[in-house]
Length: 278
Image (cartoon, rainbow, N blue to C red; front, top):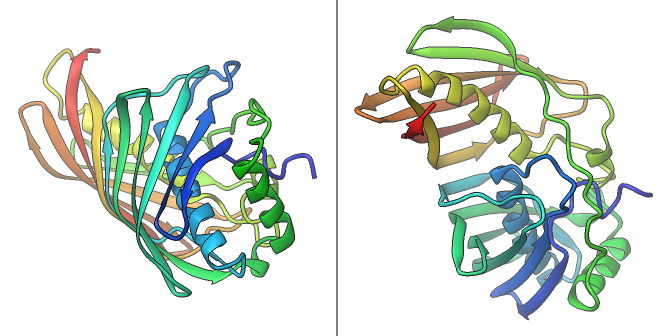
């Protein structure tokens, strides 16, 4: 399957592994991409933690996204750059993995994750265990072929309604098929949580921009208390809402929510600061 281990995989090599306790890795962002989202950087860190936890379970179980206490955005990563990745595992057993992690460009920090928790579910429900084991051996050995990621298309935000300066609502349509479904849980395709968060922040940026001082534009600084409550399936429509919680000179805090069919699937909070002339 051409898209497997390429269309949504963001670890090229595991350079150091402390079994069940942590790892260091690398991902070379392909130079031909138009951009590389900070949420794909977060995905890379989470995937490194996933490799540690799957290996610790002897490829019997795998984590799925559920909780992230804090995501601090400290910089940006661009096509052609090489991300250094690290994770420290606080807990790893048959029930869950808890970890902190980071991504850097050399000595320059890009992102930090704190207090992340992922329930561990049977790996065979999501992928072929022997194929995953083989991929892990590749990452720990010669490394995966760099440049295999070809980008991912962002779903369009369709405006639903707005209360200017206070609240915005929009919807995204999850595609029925996409290359990343063949790589992100091939046996049980679901929309990646980091892509949902990317869409939520695109909506939140619009609202945060309405609170900034004249001539300033918002920069995402922090996301807290992210909770994924349910899988989002191919073909579903997700309604998203960003609501202003507080605003001060050059700063804004928003709450985020997403629903499918009226049922809440994700929540979180985002902080924005002014970043200079628009």
